[in-house]
Image 1 (cartoon, rainbow, N blue to C red):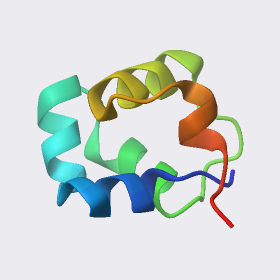
Image 2: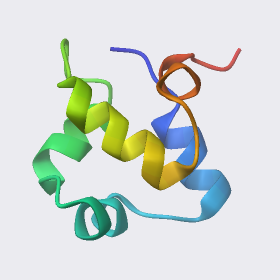
Image 3: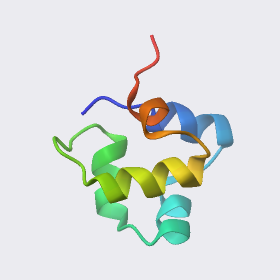
Image 4: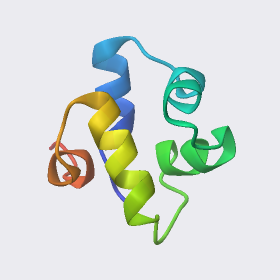
Length: 65
């Protein structure tokens, strides 16, 4: 699934491991999301990541062009 996670993390100079530690989401789940390998991420996972990054789920999922 296309998303902005890479861009958002880069802007904040954050790493997947920081998000994992702060949200309790497994690093493997976040890595799959980061590299856009997941087809149907869990809504709770998306919400936790969006909350951590200070964005809405729409902003997280809307790829920048």
